[in-house]
Image 1: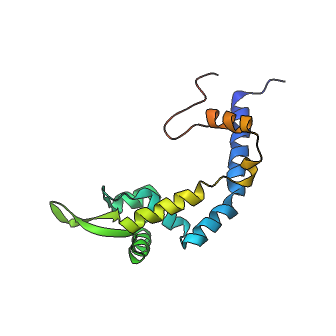
Image 2: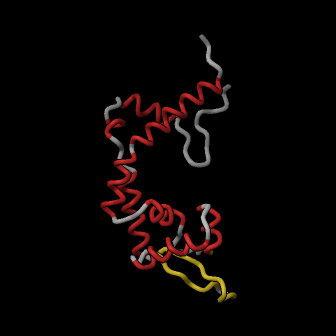
Image 3: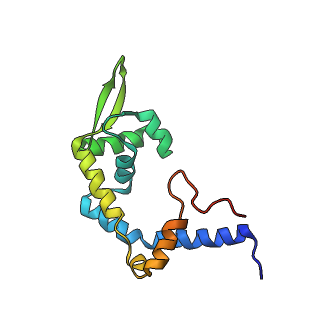
Length: 147
């Protein structure tokens, strides 16, 4: 029985999403080990050591109000992971940048989050190669344009 492509896509997405959600305990352990909250992790991922971000741009990206963004950035500053600097040419505008310690914290976070879950390690090499070939990466669609 042939299935509708949209229904198949919905089933595959559900399986992928459920798989991701089952990994929450592992991600929680990584965050706990590093003393980070999910918001800290999101902030470390959004910030850069060279290109500063305004508080407004962070609020917009995170879908939260300015007070919550301030609270998150304050937490990172207290840990030495971020700093606010005046924008060149307009001292009224503050830019948030990662510090060297923030870059190191982000590297530890990424390293921990990228540890493969046991369920993936149980797959055969051939199955893993197939997944690597077909799972889209940021900004691309590896599956091609077949319908």
